[in-house]
Image 1 (tube, one colour):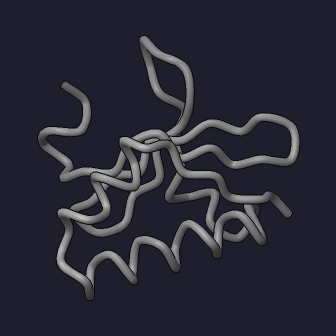
Image 2 (cartoon, helix red, strand yellow):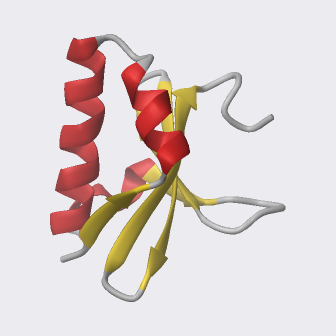
Image 3 (spheres, helix red, strand yellow):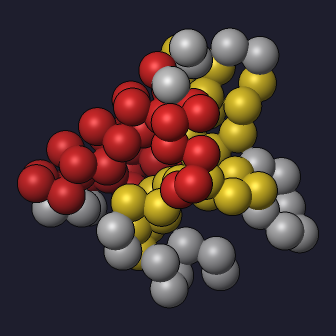
Length: 83
């Protein structure tokens, strides 16, 4: 089980997302943090940069695992998150 930590950018990104989608994204992050093996098919290692991405519908969560902490760096729509 991982503890979840959000960067300032991730918190700002989440504020811009509609409330119902935000709750869904945060629930998926919490699900992954509690049992990574159950949601491994939604997670891929990023190419060309550090970290991983979690797919939540059309949204992507960019994060990294540091010890027992899941650090969320960015949250955004599929098309713009990788720029």
